[in-house]
Amino acid sequence: MTSTDRLPLVAIVGRPNVGKSTLMNRILGRRIAIVEEKSGVTRDRKEVQAEWLGYEFRLVDTGGWMVGGNSLDKKVSRQSEQAIKEADVILFVVDAAIGVTDEDASVGELLRQATAPVLLIANKVDDQRHEAGVWELLSLGLGDPIGISALHGRGTGDMLDQIIAFLPEPEPTEEEIAAENDDGITSIALVGRPNVGKSTLFNRLIGEDRAVVHDMPGTTRDSVDTVVETEVGPLRFIDTAGMRRKSRIDDGTEYFSMVRALKSVDKANVALLVIDATEGITHQDQRLAERVDG
Image (cartoon, rainbow, N blue to C red; front, side, top):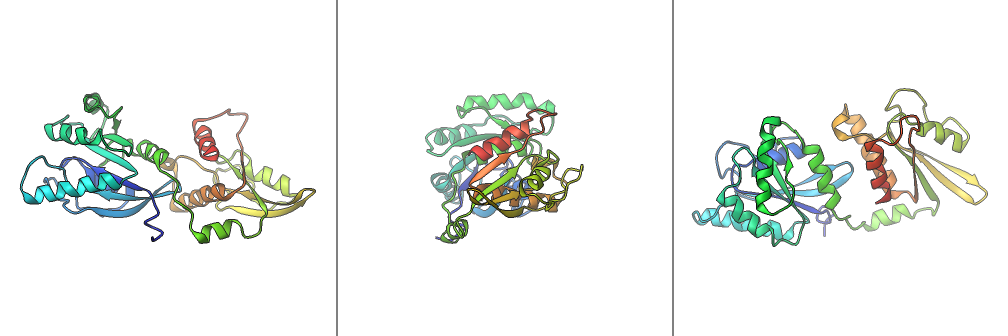
């Protein structure tokens, strides 16, 4: 089994021309699937590796699911059925601007029997005027729909947050296990939003100015670690970059700093979540607490 095969699988399914390939391109941040206003453009399963907030997964874009049709249509539909059987999370994409069609209802009936979690994606909700059509999708019996615009990116961040909430953790490789247990020193990671005082606390704990302290969010660009001798033995303190919602990240450097910070948290024995008491607990603090607790 390759390292990629170990990753959880997210399958994008739905009838033709509902925006599955556009959604795949949006998640990846680049154009890989052909997008055209014509039914049946995607015929074969396209599988790529994707990532969100440090969570890596495989993403499969399937051909449009068609009830009946010719022999080629039936083969494409079977590819979708196979993807459903293999998936850890299923994204059922419906065109909210058109509403529920007979083909949508047929796909929904099959997905209600799926063992994997199904997220109902109401696509083409480009603005508030289209939000009313989202709730028509409740008739599919697959829970509350998630309104998004794959074309413009509206709502896709919240959708990805829900996807990773359902993803199982991939089994660690032998190399990862060996790396985590290389020296037996307890690791303590300091995590939190930008500019809450992580680096100041880090410097206080280790007794020297290892981390840059400045009143500008994002001063710490990478994880800094220092081993400190204590009465109970050596402890490794890790100062991580400030973490905020992906939609508010300004550049690639900050993005990859956040990814490395999340990996530091995953490898640490203890995580200290630093909160700015003058601001109180924010929504992002709560999200980070869930990640640390998980």
